[in-house]
Length: 122
Image (cartoon, rainbow, N blue to C red; front, side, top):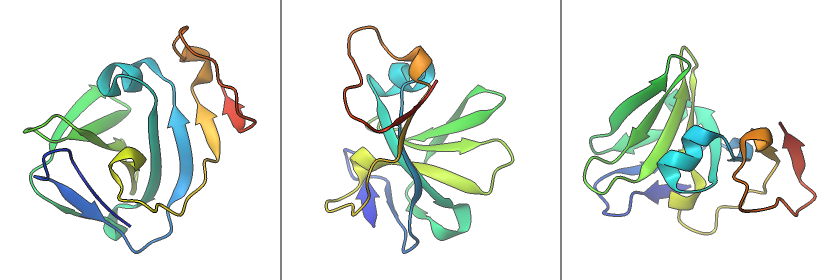
């Protein structure tokens, strides 16, 4: 699996099988991505990143990685965790993954409904 930011300055890839394929509806992801942020995660040691990622800690619980050139929101990492989430929207097709869950649905925008039958976590 390979992906990159909009301008191509940052690329990433993994040979591992991604876990936790989800769509996040929290206020922070909505503000940073402009909508729902879809991601999956692998162990940090299983993800290769090239280019200079800029990190931003929106809270003491996690940091978010983005491209300083084009602004693409690419990575999310919980504080002290050995896994890293990456944006599925930045992955080259085919992704060969299936959505497992919606998270932070209690915080979703009021301008859309979640209409699929995928598991939801408030």
